[in-house]
Image 1: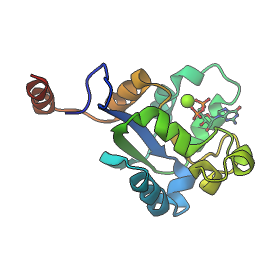
Image 2 (image 1 turned 90 degrees about the vertical axis):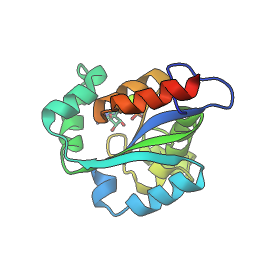
Image 3 (image 1 turned 120 degrees about the vertical axis):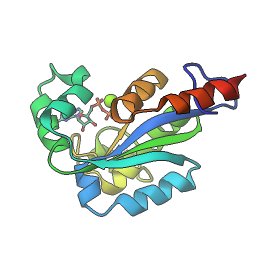
Image 4 (image 1 turned 135 degrees about the vertical axis):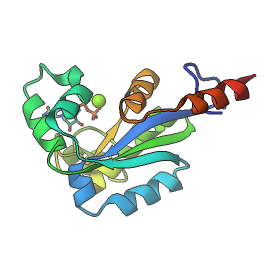
Length: 160
Ligand code: GDP
Ligand code: MG
């Protein structure tokens, strides 16, 4: 079963996707989910959550020294978000491809088929999050979702 700390050829991988407040409140959720499924992702788990400042700051800790940090936290706490575990082969890279570049304004010109081009606005309000590596994905999934001991037991058993 999906997914241990390493991944081999043909194995499924997980990534964390977030529909950010502008995407969620802008009625893009159904269209985004439709694209997710069309591109072969399985939505493993999902939840709607209103981030508070502390959670948002913890999630984006790597950017805490950046000039845009406080603006980013304000954006991410401005309304509920939809958090999803997305599963497929090469999920991390494929999800980043599908959402497009960070700057949604530029994405409209350079990556018109990307989801950020469809629902994002600019470098900050870009509608979506995607993990940037396999390691980040597993860390971010653990940040939002408790995986029960019985899940783990099933995984270990299936790997035998
Ligand atoms: P991502 O991995 O493509 O989401 O981009 P980053 O990890 O570099 O940045 C995290 C999030 O911070 C982005 O998705 C944007 O919402 C926001 N962001 C990134 N760079 C900037 C910037 O230069 N200015 C502002 N205002 N927001 C930014
Ligand atoms: Mg990032």
